[in-house]
Amino acid sequence: MSTAAIYEYKMKVRDYECDAQGVVNNAIYLHYFEAARHELMENCGLRLRNLTEANILPVVRNAGVSYKNSLRGSDEFICNIRIERKGLRYYFHQQIIRIPDNTLCANAVIEVVCLINGKVAAPDMFDKAFADYITWNK
View 1 (cartoon, rainbow, N blue to C red):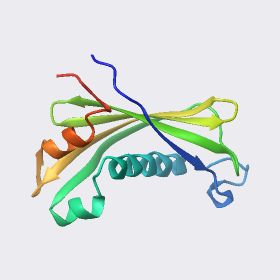
View 2: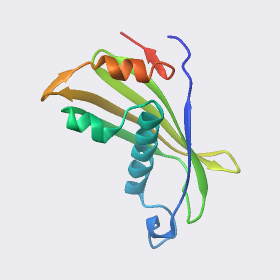
View 3: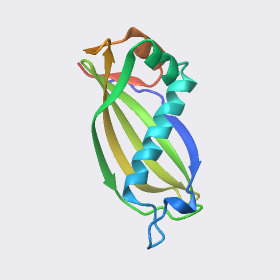
């Protein structure tokens, strides 16, 4: 397997994302992971709005999250991404790392497939756009 670049996106916890104990609610981490994927797409020239208008839909098929350490209000963090491609599936390996102590807060593997005109397909545009970030595993 070849080494691919890792995309990083910096974010900050908003107080309303925290639960009664003052930590980020578990479901919010999925929002962070999705926001980072959307930023990666746009950084690579893929706008979700344009894709949906062309009836190309990247769809989350499965999401697995492992929570390690809690984020709290106003914490800054990096969400990083590397992509693995297996057949028609893209696996977004993501981590949330708290700044400045470099603490791993969550790991995720998000499985995505692309629907083109309602059918699962491999869009060449994704492979080209994500070329720097994909490792291939056939």
